[in-house]
Image (tube, rainbow, N blue to C red; front, side, top):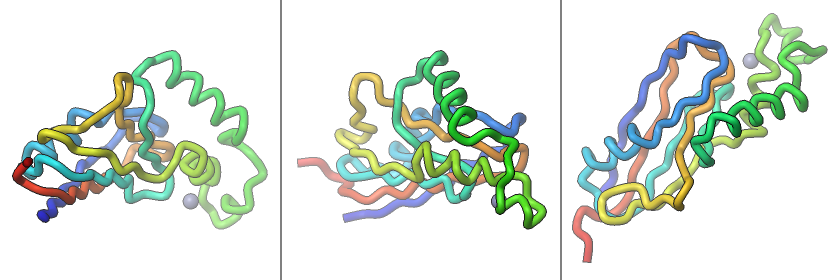
Length: 141
Ligand code: ZN
């Protein structure tokens, strides 16, 4: 069994962004030369999420409206009494998920027909990293 670790780097132009990172994850898998195994994609920041869903712009707007409806960006949040202004971002990350583990088959992501991996940034405009850690075999039977 082999392991491989790499990091994707982001500095989003906007505070909130949804980025399809499927091609970046596949690029890391190719670099790892691992043909069969699992890839963990972890946003490494507590105000960002990694999730798997459809790459459809209407759905992304629906997610944004859902998040605003459930946890408005402005609110009477105790976390913001510490001088921070990102309580909503911590809660959005809980709602959208932490990290994903996905299958690798024949040297690439083995995705369902509409599955794409997204990095959702909720408190951006600064340097962020996403961990990509792969475990598996370099030779396929
Ligand atoms: Zn905070």
